[in-house]
Length: 444
Image 1 (cartoon, helix red, strand yellow):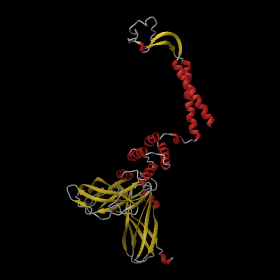
Image 2 (cartoon, helix red, strand yellow):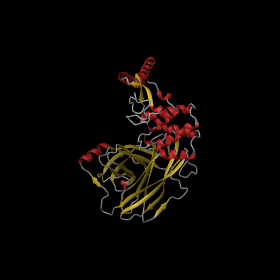
Image 3 (cartoon, rainbow, N blue to C red):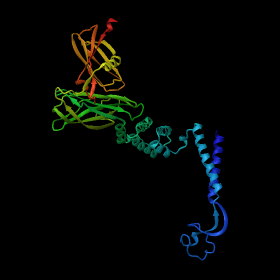
């Protein structure tokens, strides 16, 4: 392969040489020629003051002695050979399996890592990471790489994120190459924060609020803690509610790209009948693993996310959604909605049972109270909330009991309260029941 590449390279040089010879041309005579337009000045120079063709002054530098004519056949032959050898080199490059990035200058790789295709970005960052690990990059190159990586991360128009960028920036941060502000910017840009709020609610009912976070523009394995807390709720023309300082909002952990979680709450807000404008401010904090960033005085990054929602308080008896039920829908949910797990436990406090429900590809949204009919009463387990055509979805929760019953009934009942943050005008409206048998641990 090396000999073939060498031969192709030699022929490429020959082709380029032929192009140069063809453009230079062959000597025709010793006549003076105007450099401006190529006019033959025989009989006019020396002696003439200006070129009769273009009007240029005929001083010493404006005249060339010896007239040449281009060799068209040589030029086109060389151009053809050059083009053919270039295509041959590209083909050999692709077939050889040689990692040409190892031969590229660092500046070239940095440009490629910022604006190339996803595949070329990956290969460029991979090579930069190798050079960094081998201590082959100077301080100025490291600074350029950090600035380029942060700019790439901030470019949300690029839907394809390259995790190797995250790994490289995090490694440089661990080695002290990132300033404190740069590290804060990196972690702020690493997360996608999606706040949502229930759009319709009955008078006097709590409003569902949810905020999900996902580390989808980070590296592949750095452990961190994160939290999101509602700092303020402002109702236009009404009251403002603020979180008390020092109160933990709870936190989760993230290790690797695309991990994260969500927090949800239901708040009783003094809303008026009709449309209400509600502005909510969340604080998002990233900290060291094992810490509670929501109350810690030291953290990696903290920023605010504010969003304004329109919440309609719908007076009775106007429906919030259309509750749909027909034979086709009933058949679909009979096949695709089921009790997926039943986990009874007995501990030092009291018996408890965990129940989860799964639903596959619902044609319409699902908004149901999940209840456990046991011990002669209905006990609320959780809300089952699933958008239409959402693929496979599972929700579950546990509830404590007074006794250890051998059987119970799980009831799924359509409910306005379960609508939560669903943005839908239609939901499944049929109540479903599932008798279950409970085998307690000490009965096995």
